[in-house]
Amino acid sequence: MESSRIRILIVEDYDPFRAFLSSSLSNEKQFEIVGTASDGLGAVEKAQELQPDLILLDIGLPQLNGIEAARQIRRLCPKSKILFLSQETSPDVVLAALGTGACGYVAKSDAGSELLSAVNAALKGEVFVSRSLAKNEDINFKDSEFRAESCASSFESSGDCRPLLEELLEAAIRVTGADCGNIQLFDSATGELRIYAQRGFSQAFLEFFDRVFDEGCVCGRALKTGRRVVVENVAESPIFAASSRAREIILAEKVRSIQSTPLISASEEMLGMLSTHYREPQVFSQWLFERLDAVASSAVQLIERWRQIQPAALNRFKL
Image (cartoon, rainbow, N blue to C red; front, side, top):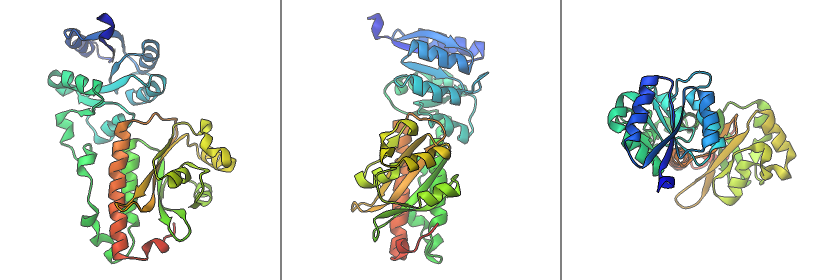
């Protein structure tokens, strides 16, 4: 019976709040507090040693902040779920925290009423965000997804949807904690993906990946399969076996992890690709995939609307 209890690690540098968390959860018979830590480095070490079921993690920690600690823990303890508890309420901080693959974010001011609900949701694999934070549209990104139809007028006169695709790319980078990314459009005449919007890449990268049609890179593999392709560590991925030059260019860009999500219409027509790139190896979560799918859905609507207004649009694009 003892082995079936949920093993919890608490990481908090403020002694009274750490005591509150420990007391609150110890009162529940199904939980066992297996350890505590008061700084980020200690959190990583304890997590690796204990491999707990759940980690309650603060953000403003000494030595290593909670977001960076979470990224390291996700690689070392992929089965451990992470729930943030912090006084930080900035949308950028909340999204960056959730972008690590954490199962939730509780504002410390709400912990008294929401702690148990958040813990139970996290253990079920659900994403929990404090009610006081969820009202913020910048945090509740999936609910604030804009519809392409409402944006059509912004490019009817110019015939160019690049600014809106750039906005969507920025959103994808922001909500997934990526360092750079791009949106490619599919040229049906040549069977190639062409970069149309990008952020953070060198000219050498843009020139090399200006036209992609084979499987020697992540977006090329996603193009061939029609499914999202994820590479958690570029240096170890077999995808680049056919193109050592592609691997070389990507590593020179200091990119270590990539995902490419196809943009496919309701009629199953390939429209393009949404890719995000990360400087550190990543462990991708369902939460990240849901956010990427929300952005991809908006991008598909936008491209389809663009094509209705400018039928030959995809034959004229150039970065």
